[in-house]
Image (cartoon, rainbow, N blue to C red):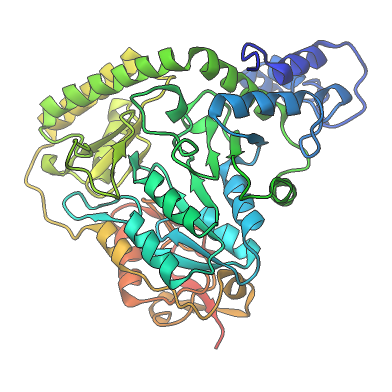
Length: 490
């Protein structure tokens, strides 16, 4: 057992920030002396004294032998891994590295169609060929859950030469599928299970939370420590266990997708967040769960249907076996509001900001940083919504259903081939039945609905325009106004 009280990287950074010396190295602001006054007024000078580079005492991220190595070993023990890597480019680079380390050009990888755009980037970088599996769809709630073990089994039977299986655990809504069963099936083919656990870094620290991905049998998992724990934005971790994945390939892949000038502020925040959870995680998560239950109970009483995502014993499906109770999804459609409208009112008029909105729902992340006062403001916000905005709801076509049922991947070109192919830009109306040459990712829900190599259908064009009409926005593509799209040249 390691001493989880230690913070070797944080201590080294603190010592170097306080050491009197003449700095003739990057960054150019020289420990805050060259920072503009408005920025110094906002953040203070102390943070810039600690904004240091890879000095001798601070170790090297890509070849750690000192305090970074010690900090990563402490993190591996705390999170239940055999080896851990610190990430300064977010979980995005961890997902990309996971695919690069397990798949080469033309290799097949099985993954859900509702993957994050980072997985698509990993396909483009690696040249891997995706074998997409539809996630389970909840038509009553218009929400996609997880892929099922049976769907993974079927995909592997059809593609026994696949090099890896990739899963999302939990989903953005906090839903966890049957990862243990998926791991068992995947390992029967002696290939690794890779997991995007960006929103599940807290699972290891309380028994009332879902089983962590590693404990469920994952070979590799990527966690955004900044999303739900106490690290700075962009600070994440990649964990592995077992021998199905070559650790050297992970290290080499990370060198391709991480900055060669890593922020020690981000790295030190990972060290500190690990210590905080290792020492106090159970207490912090108990308090967080209590706040979430308070919000869930009171909002349910106010609007009648608030948190429909409830997995009851004996009623679970293989795409939904557990729920992260710190993730609060509120259905607002019975108030006569779309999620977009409710989000705008809460944010601009009532001082309550959600994580994201969709047609029928608002989703809130309740974490160790929230307070009882936050919950009071959230409840008060919904009280005002229910009193002042309830009216007859105009029925609308569910959005997510269009996404889940709209499988259009051609299979003739890998995402990499299409991304680098000769392309042309056409008016949106003329792109139907053409092969897309760029990523098109609407928010909400933040899932790419088109990727390079995918056939553009009329239904997906209608879907994208519907998102825009309801107040969503489009990212990833060159023309975010969506008047044009890039397609492969015929």
